[in-house]
Length: 441
Image 1 (cartoon, rainbow, N blue to C red):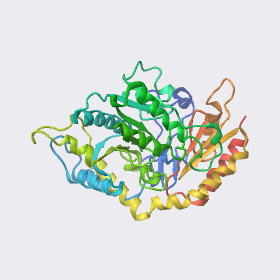
Image 2: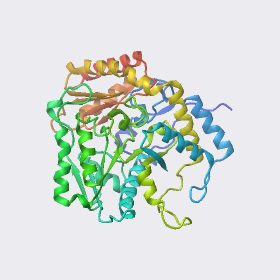
Image 3: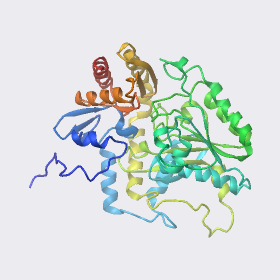
Image 4: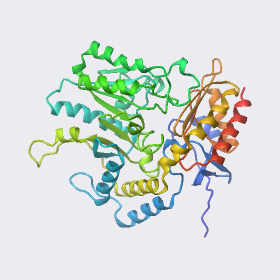
């Protein structure tokens, strides 16, 4: 009996969908049933160009043979192994591969299952690190307005997106925030903006307010993605690094989005030439195929825990699925795919064409700002008075009907295509968006 390639769910009510207008969706569902390369296939047989790499995660495109084969082989050999006091070879192989791909200061990898868990892990490592060194008074955490660090309590506490925070109580104590890096004078900038390095000096004010000796860590996205692609001004990250070093504060880069080639380098730390103390990652680690995240730590941080009796657990933290065998196999195959196909360099080479194409939309209706870096872009729209987010959501629906998947956050269209994108795909995506934008009310 042949399998139905386009199954229709028999009941949409059971699934409470994340970050979704559930009532709107279930009135007119948008269902994907297959994917390959740069395209999704809908349940009615249409091809939809993926302009977002899924959710910033399918960096190598869809249904890549090496990754599929690795998952199938691993599931047939070892489906699960406990991560506490036991191990399996592929987790160690993947940790070594990630270490070798990362910038030089990073020597150790702690596996998680998502970007949110990576953030929680990095925050806990930072707090425990200071305590291990005899500075247990360092308990404060500093995030940034408009920052996105996942949806667990630590992440939304240091995060700065109001709708992710406002209905969930008082969150963690001892958290403060730097201002966002978005300045109106940087509108329509190509790449890294000129103005705004001084915003990092707000960390000095926070240190003066609380005492720098009470602060454990500062966490920022090198490039803030989910809030609408906010780029670091020239000199900003360097200044943050200087201030953190002066006050003995750990600097955490949340690279869940920017890790694994999105800016044309392995990590944004490498791209900007600024080294934090911890890096969080996920998404592109397994090409979005299987949930997995990681925290990269320097030898200095790792070694601070390696004291006391050798039979004792050094860090009381971890997850049932840390370094899961099938996820590890997917990660190894993903990194091999990136390397064999030169996808990071490919992204860097295509970035100028992407930039020119994106900025060709400057004259479209309701466009108030454009931002880009690597293979990332943002189109900020003027909101409809009294109906924020509606204009961008209308653009999302129209683009989907016209065969392109885009992502919206507020009234900002965010684009982050798979790194395998070719110039004709860029032309199709931007041409479709031109038609969509010029038809908007």
